[in-house]
Structure formats: structure tokens, C-alpha cells
Image 1 (cartoon, helix red, strand yellow):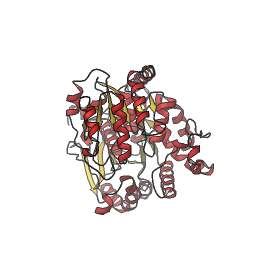
Image 2 (cartoon, one colour):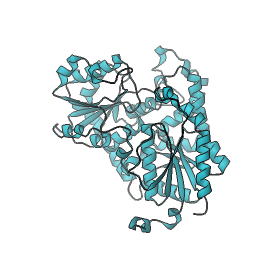
Image 3 (tube, helix red, strand yellow):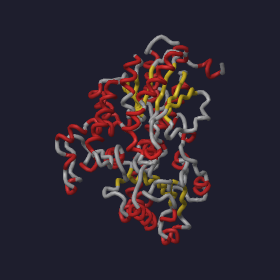
Image 4 (spheres, helix red, strand yellow):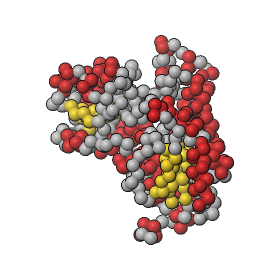
Length: 457
């Protein structure tokens, strides 16, 4: 046994946990980070993965890895990832149950920790008499919005006209009607039914883990406790314990850091719309010309699949390249945590995914927020209205609004105020991770909670 093994607490080191991440980048990263956190606390970790989007976990010899079939056809794998979620939930029931039963026959399992979107796993856990803890990889505020969808539908908000999108949601401040989570699907009823299953499965779980910290979402955590009546552990941000780079599904282009090294402090706007968002060519041009007209240096992540039907940079107009060749840099994928912590970065044009939002707060980088679907609507509203650490593009990706927002953030008075706000929030975040801090204490409570699930092996 190494020194680390000798120093961990006796009551937890003999407990075995099984973790089951959803196979999307924004879900794999926090689950792998959580696995590392809990392993560091002395737990034995087994991770069950599906074949789809299976990451390379060769860097984790300290985990036991099991891979199960997902039942997806080749044509299904090539479709939009969000559309695969109900199929994965339906087709992984048997393989997950069998894999878990096999593990259980070898050694006892203290509990399973699954992504909340794997709602079917609650029934499997009940059948095998194993406690299930849910990891929700979004903000608490957006999860509460999901839980409120039946109420909002009954109140008529989901059927409001386009002209009413800026009306307030009285039952859920600070949201406006346009901020209610939507999923760009042809079957919104099916999407709402799916979310209802996720919420119901979460309510039946033994406990909840959130990648957030108390000082960021204290009112929302209190509201969650009232509604779900479950032990809840806000132990984030996870990436402050362990980096996500080793679980990346894409090769990270480190030349982005070399380019940033040549730029002036706080001069560059970083642009990334996450791992699964898609836009059409018209919106791409709006982003391109918004960046061009802002006259600010930029680093833009242009990943494969960002634009529907196109995988190449040639889709960008020649005039864009001519105008920005000396102050713009484009890569297919970047080491985002390293980028955001670089002194040259002064702002982040983001899709408002939760991992990106947290990483930006951690580095004190103010945001310009757009959104595409799901929790991103809620996150961007909170960034703009509640935390006041960014600017929400109220009309979406339009070149004039992008230009104005970039200039406000990078060189305007409003940008200075936003920067002060986010640096203050960054300080609170750092304090939460120190001994006696809220996340530090919550993690200790989680360790004790998991260890209470039965006699050690």
C-alpha cells in the first residue's frame, strides 16, 4: 500500500462505489472528476461506461472499468446527441442491470452514483437493493426549472406567443418566458415526459450531488431541500480538485496557449459553444462578423459539428479571414481550463453550459452569454440578472449585439463592474474549498453519508 493509502480514513477505504456517467462530454468530465475526488477520499471506484462516446481512461489505472453495450445502430450514432438520451435509457436497462449484478456477486457495493439523466437506474438499484445517489451536472437553479415545467405548462407559459417571450415568469423569478428550458425537438411532449422521469427518479434517490457551491446558489439549494427532502451535497466546483483534460473526447490544440502567450493581458475574447451545440450557417456568419466588427483579438473554438452539414473552416467567408488574420486564432478544440486561466483572456463568449460557466467564474473571467437549449437558458439568465458576472445576448447570436457586448465587456465601464463582481465571486468560491468552507464541509458530509450505507467490505 502506498503512503496515500496508509493515510486515508479506515472507515471509507474499504467501501466500493460504482459510478455511471452519461456519455456526453459535459457529463463525462464532472463524473470522472467526482470519481477522482472520492478515490482520493479512499473509496474503491468502478466506472460503468457505454460503448457510445467511450473516453480513453487508460490514465486511470486506479479505477476498475466495465463497458456495456448501448444498443445503438450506426445510423442512430450519427444523429444529434440529445435525441439519443431516451434510446440509451431504454436500451441500457438490461446490460446495466447484468453488469451491476455481476459486480455485486463478486464484492459488496456501498452505493451507485449515476447521472440524473440515467433515470432508469433507480429501478435497477431498487431491484438489487443498492442505494443510489444522483449526480446532477447542471446548476441547481436549472434543475428546479426542470422540476417546475409541469406547473409552468399548466400556467400557459409554454404556449405563449413569440411576442410574449420577454414577459416575466412570475412563479420563477428571474426567468422570462424565453428562459424556460426548451430542447429544439419536434416532440416537446416527449421531452417533458422524459424530464418528468428524470425528476421523479431523482426524488427516489438516497441523495443528490451538485457541481456547485453554496455561496453561488444558496437560495436555490434551500428551495431544492424543501421540494426534494433528500440529503444534498454541493461540493463543487469539481474541476478545482481534478482537471478534466484527461477525459476529453477531443484532442486539445495546445497551440492556442502559445498564441495567447503573445497577446496583451486581458485583451482576448475566448469563444466556445461547447461540445454538442449546433448552429446554422447564418448564425455562424453573425458570430464571425460580430467578432470582426468588435475589433478585439479572439480565440475561437470551431469544433467539428458546430455548423449543421459542414465540418470545415472554409465555410467562413473570405472577407472574415482577411479582416481578422492578425488578431484572431481558430482551433478545433482547446484546453479550456488552461485558456480561461491565461492572463491574456479578458472575456468568454459562451453557450452557457454549466461546466463552462463554473470554469469562467473560477478564473474570474466575465461572460457574454448565448444559449442553445436546456439548462443554458437558465444559466445565462442567472449570469446576467442574479450574479451579474456577464452580459446575456437577449436576441441570441446577432452580429451587432455581439459587437456591442464584446466592446462593453472588454473596454467599457460596464465591463469593469462585471469584472469586479466576478472577482468577488471567485474569492467566495476559493474560500468554499478551504477547510471550514462550504464545499469542503459538504464533501466531508458526503464521505460520511456514503460510508453509512452498510458494513465495509
